[in-house]
Length: 377
Image (tube, rainbow, N blue to C red; front, side, top):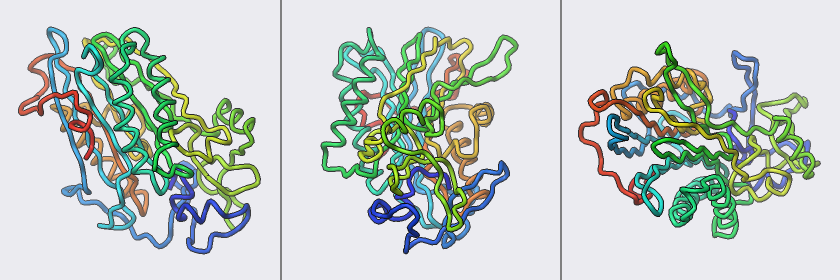
């Protein structure tokens, strides 16, 4: 399936107690090849997930729009769809998001964030980060002058607070990708494998993309070096014949836990003890709305079967951000239905920039600085 945790699929507590080479007694697994020759982890007891084009799973949405400079508008729509274990059997949505306008002490920023929880307490972890991260950032007066330092400190602080909270993050945690926008600049901070992508038009008018974050996978040379240097190991799961199944994962040396399929996250106490880190990676972009068309922040439920360039093309025909987010999420659902027996949670925050009158922003929701008013419910 490619989801983060083996623990999530095999009832976390039991997986965390299994030794290397043991066969889990409660879950029968199989691997199937996809077209790219990669192996996905799936569960044979799950039936096909064929989503209707006319129906969405349980979904939360939020939107707002406002002028952006003298000649443009910014249109924002957030959408989060619960995944499935089987047809009409919806799982708890572990994704979360927030989008806040007039943010910070001097109300000069707009901030967007997507979190993708994993593990038994994944939902609590992502919700905790949504609530506390936005609060930490809103109180720091240095956000205008030194955003990188403020964001880095905030990621570490919310990580510590999560570990000291009532949320059991022993084998649970969340990704976090955040874009902080002013009229002239985007600062993206990322920990995990959710992603932020910019869409823009080049000099010829052709639509192109630029990744504003990198997916933090444990097989990346620098990430693997850090993990192995901290006493962890990186390798895929093995089936009964010791053949690799699915993506490389992070394990405690000589043990079969936690099985995290990313190298950075917030929470995940066991994985953090062997080199996984909450340290965010930063990418900055000088914003020019005469060329820059959109920003997409999304969980890997979107990116599993859609790459960055294709995502920009999918939304390019949309009249507004709401239509764009619907196009992207519905296409993601369709790809999951075609490829897998299950469906991951799917979350997308779509931000469109356009000249006044060029984007249909009729009946926008009121902007607010309250993170709960613009985050998922």
